[in-house]
Image (tube, rainbow, N blue to C red):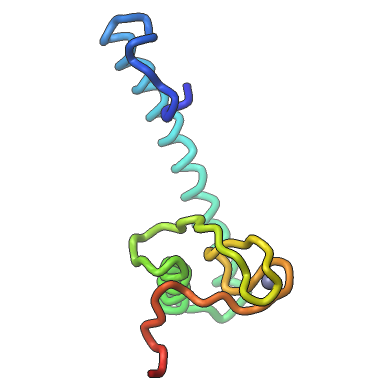
Length: 114
Ligand SMILES: [Zn+2]
């Protein structure tokens, strides 16, 4: 079931049926979330074992990536922008243009010099 296209008026008409569909959807999401969490933990432990990376560096990088879209909301927002250097469409989730490599400024530059 695609959550965004879910329309209760065209469903079976039964609230309990809709509830069970939502429950199944949430269970699938939980399963995916658990798998992603496991993969992240495994990758992090491999990096820690093989490289000199601290928890603080990880937290700082997470914050930097979070702020690329100008909002500290704990998630990556896929804002499409036009690269000022080459004019092609790229995304703010990257620190540089995926085509020409030009740096991409965030909406907010907390450390910008005036
Ligand atoms: Zn570019």
